[in-house]
Amino acid sequence: MGPQSVAAFVFEPIVGAAGGVVPAPDGYAQAIQAVCRKYDVLMIADEVMCGSGRSGTWRALEHDGVVPDIMCIAKGLAGGYIPLGAALVTARVAAPIHAEHGAFMTGHTFTGHTAACAAGLAVQHIVQRDRLLDRVRTVGATFQETIRRTLSRFDEVGDVRGRGFLIGIELVRDRRTRLPFSPDRALSFDIGARAFADGLICYPCSGNADGTAGDTIIIAPPYNASDGELEEIVVKLAGAVDAALGACRT
Image (cartoon, rainbow, N blue to C red; front, side, top):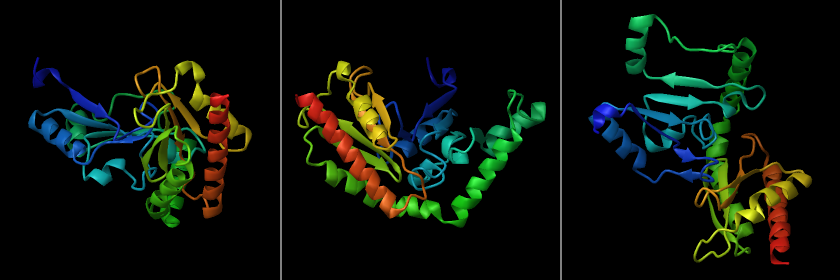
């Protein structure tokens, strides 16, 4: 074993559903990139969930001052109007492929789908025109703090974390020990169902603690959500958490 057996390092700059919104520690991405460059290993960033402006910068890794060799993006790219994903590569990665084949020899039936690409372009024009990334970056911190303050009355809320408009709320049995609820309780899905019934769509996640136990709720509002809509999200989220935890205690 050695660097010659490693092709690439793949990671999420902000771990999404698998961790319940866990931003990489400061300095982590730079350290990983230094190791990759030392051993000529590709650095691949999975920004499908956290990229395209979701965290307040177009690339999530802008926060870390890092440019990966390959980056996967989707979701926010077309604003949810139509499915669209893309893989971006640096000139250093593209050059030998183009020299050998003239183009990337990969694809599937819907590669380069005209309507999807048009939707993505339109969304990005609007994001730029309305300075929505500035809003996500500045309002996101306040929004996260409002969620943290509103939910602080619940001992079962162990953590509120994230960046921009990607926020995770972790539920625990004991805030001191961080012990998770039993998977049989399916607490995150209970909260998600109660929120949905009240008009709020959130993202329940499970298994975040050990692969089986662990409950997190992800909140990811539209970049152009108004102040009033953000307040409504917090109120409805708190109501769903209160109702679900009340059911736990009975």
